[in-house]
Length: 454
Ligand code: GLN
Image (cartoon, rainbow, N blue to C red; front, side, top):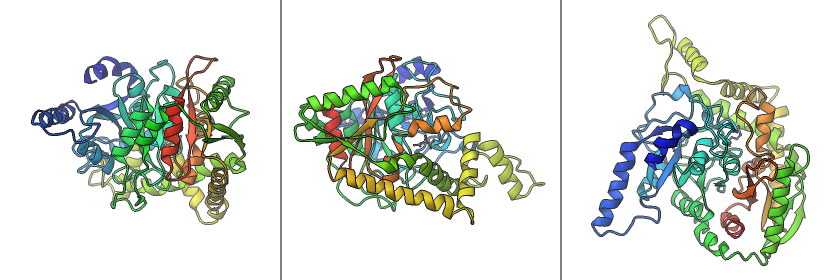
């Protein structure tokens, strides 16, 4: 895999940092353990993985795709990083991403865009484009992403790979650089459903270092993926969300989705139409809640604690240094989010914007609850379109935001959702994803359906 990275990453730009030494040392440790007659520490011992650069890695640079963290080497591991190491997983390096995970194309990285291996002129999705592209380019068999509004599932869909957002609180956020804390969730990326399930069980589980971590058994996702592989969905009720179609959806994507639903029916599933009217307001609610939390979380980048510091000489005050550093260190999309969030939270506007968005969030949660009273899982296209061209939406934030139309409701409700490859669009020959959603802590349900469909 290191050779493959050396061969293709000049074109793909999936990696921000390749940790050759660390990877070889981790691999050698697994070999030595086996040679000494020990059993493998986990089913994934010795398997290489690409880690999104939003997770702290002790001794290895962590930039979050931002200039403001350039040169920062964390003194500790995120819980996800630690669990991977303890499972003998070989971390190849850190993957490219939209700055602070804000974006849907990986074009907002301060270190240049990642390119989609299916067509190098197109985006690999975002914000975790580097992780999903590394799978599609066969640079790594496994990767880790984070999903605040779709950043695991949307890149999975447009690169033809699997991406899972677990139930909120299922995977620890300790050591995950915060974007929007009530939405952020780490999760597995892989080329097959079973691979994703094996990785899910390595990284999931209660962590006292994260106050929102769920103290409950990890959903049995590996068993569910194995069960689903028999291809029998008899008795499973699948809800088709009527809100996810119409304007803005490519006909090729909708045709692929219809074919996917027909296939689920053929596997024995009962198909039921479900209406979730509040989902129409998910996107605007998200683009108030996420920037509001971001504007608070990013206050920690004060030029004193981490990475970049600009203009630090005896003539300037701490405030001037902070201001110069933020001006130079944050990119345009991050600045836009900080301004939107600060505005939405300001007194006089709070009730109208942030307060209303929180009410919408409750309505969306209720829509899910009502839907799941009648069906086991919900399905939709993962994205309204296939991968768009690099630059196509760069100057149109609204068009960029719409890439997450189908993925955002699950983040607002905290429920699990995943994207599984659904063939190629008959319109442009590019990958399409099928999204499968389940109730909180029922992550295994979607794995079973995904494995049967795959
Ligand atoms: N594209 C969405 C945004 O820009 C979601 C990003 C994410 O899930 N990290 O906020």
